[in-house]
Length: 223
Image (cartoon, rainbow, N blue to C red; front, side, top):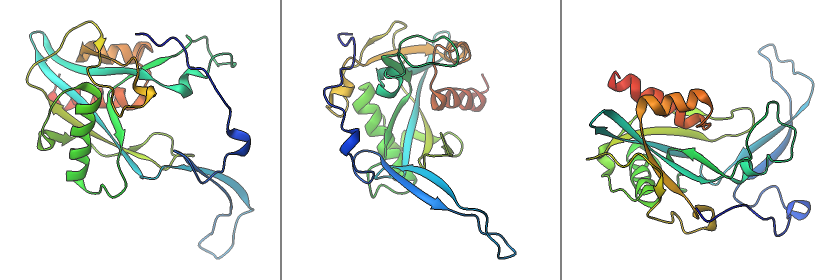
């Protein structure tokens, strides 16, 4: 791991538009309409969109000699990194990489279950360096909102079994993902499923979609 920090070269916030960039912020004034024809007082709403409405997250797993193993990826997460220096509710480490399952945003026009599977297989190849056929990915329960108060995105969970498990200790991701610097320094790790869930409960793995994926897989496999 050769990345030690994220350096801000320029803060574009003061002149940034709300309707451009990777995230689009809609700042609205709204009111509730009622069945009797009356309306509530007006209030403000902030809604965050991306160009594509949905994302896919993939639990890649294998049957190891001691049971089911799952693959995670440590990757740069600027929002977590920039928590440093701010007053957190409880003491916490200074973040740089966050451990998660493989995931990615759907491209505009990618619609339907087959598109979800193709995107999931592509993310597995880009982020984990593993080949899995789209038809080898199955839905792992229904989609969910991660932050429905302000973010419109839904996450679709998929699961796919690989032919063999990996290694216990973290190792460098064999690919650089989509080629952006945010993919730099990523690593991969195989964990026993029970240990991965325990790591979520202990706060070692802090990504919600990852914990939900592990728990749904455990329920599906009956382990």
